[in-house]
Length: 199
Image (cartoon, rainbow, N blue to C red; front, side, top):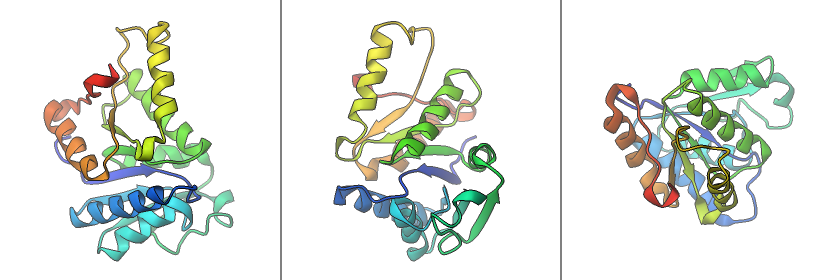
């Protein structure tokens, strides 16, 4: 992989309590649209999911929503995604999101967002993929997770020989440049790099 054509964005189906979260989602949607990069997301029309998808479409971009059948009433799909894929369950949803995306970004979100992010980190650790993974640490939202990962490393549950590479930024404007640099840096390898302060 030498180019990013589609980015999977994991984020909450609620807006959270910080206005910065919605602002970041909308800003990311605009950036993706303006750069001709398709959004792959959870398919909902509410919360941060709705904000990022709505922004993509407002700015002339393309969005693919992927949602399991049982969530279609709760998260109101079909309103935003130009392409909507309804899956039979969560496993099929996550697999389809993975297959469609060239990179992954985690905005703030709840347990579902956390689970999706950690699954990608785990698959990368196990050598199942080398697609870039970026944690958008908006207003320090992901600080507790980053501290936990450092703690895991410190007590050798993540030995140095086991790489879990990911990118971190607090600035939405840095997301796409960092993903592109990760792809360029590894060329076909798609190598990801974690900033020095997180090593």
